[in-house]
Image 1 (cartoon, each protein chain N blue to C red):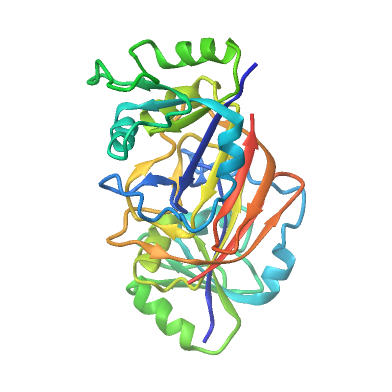
Image 2: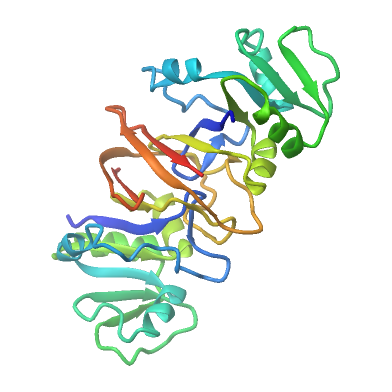
Length: 168
Length: 168
């Protein structure tokens, strides 16, 4: 079965974006394992806000199939974007059973939350940045119960970024 | 000058205790560098809640001077406990200029917050546990501005705990 991998940058205080969606604090001076990661996936899952940010830079990941959960977007000019209005965990569970490479859970937190809650996320790849943002979009929201993960790797970069990799 | 060191356990979602103050999720199966750390400090800074938790186990750190910021506690049965009602950052800044070993910023978040906000914390030692608690007492609260730190070390333990060490 394909794995659903949450791979994103996070601040020391657990934010994936600043109060106005800023991600200028994310390091771009090195590859940080992204080239290898991008070879391991062929599909993304994201919410409407993440999609609209990617649109500013053109099509979202032209080499992947991009599933966008959005209440406002109904059509996309891009052939590789599939707008979805189904229940998020049900849809993603079904997608994990289809053939293909791993699935990148891209964000944001409204999409991540129900997938963490229902144990659909198989792997966390957290690029912990050495900054306290002081506010913003939190990676995790309140859950009904604790979720235990297993650390499989940690990679420390000269910039001070530490990538923590966990499996369910 | 003495350093003020924030050394504590934190969950993947940034909590230092569960919704009811639980810390049963903190690993106690190994030393995790605490023996060496305890040799480097001679003073603690904590709030009333942390103090009352420690009291359940007897005196808080008998070998240290423990400064407790509390609105409710007025006296302590323990000689090495000093109850303080001064402004937190002002008091701790002054303490850092006195002779002695480093100062352990023990918690909780109401004490940590103003000290982070006013750049009084010199070092963060975060024992990141492989668990999402889903709610609880957050390590960081909202700040007026970003705070950048410098990673000085990261230590990965077989249990999956990763200690991240940052300096200002």
